[in-house]
Image 1 (cartoon, rainbow, N blue to C red):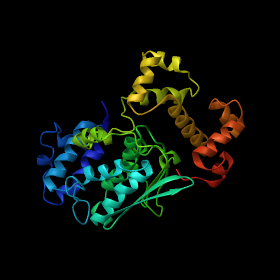
Image 2 (tube, rainbow, N blue to C red):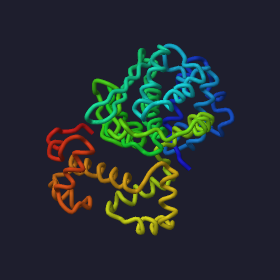
Image 3 (cartoon, one colour):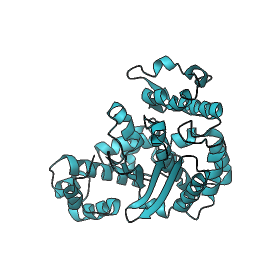
Length: 332
């Protein structure tokens, strides 16, 4: 079962509390005990978090949970997703959804732009002081990545995330899971950049799948791209230790047959080649920024036969060579 750090349970009700709602009323029917939220090390089920968010929506009649100038009426997310489903591709679908939300003029402007580096999503809050813990800012930002993954039917990698506030040390370990990419804090904007694949990835979802996703919202979106009990997560952990493990070796390590492992990965919107590439990218970034290993040594550690192949792959992932990345002093 996927779980979420207690910090997020503690802060997600703040917008509703400022409008006079009690935490006890908001957790009704979720199985949650508010006394647990601040208990060190406590984690709650993602299903309970989804229930809590739905309760806040219903209590405030606001899908933006009391964090904006004006409410976003229930049904806004469903309609935005309907518009997204009509897009030519994932990027176009996201732009359609963003245009709708921007027309609401409810207090968040969402900009979606293409660049050589990938697809950027920038969010601007008219009154950011309404969200002093940055809870909804991060929730809203990551929803666009999760929606992109859902539309594509596969995990689209996050390349970077930038925020105009200090690093959240109190919950940074959980933050890193929500934003599995390089980070920049005290920056000029609040934005994420997705892999360029998002610019042209086809939309693979049907109206029936949309209806099911909206009925369960926000649960399905919150559990993309992978839960902490998923097969994707297990395979990623194994490949992080040994990037060149073959399908048969991964199947044996997870107690599955190769056929079933492939099938379960597909069911979670992933495939082995993409996971392996993402692991190699993430490990390459870590080694380039936190070690003095040569490019040749890093290529060998990642299972590349020669440094030239690694450099070509790294340029595809990030738009620059390993040496250029290292020289740029990327913020972490």
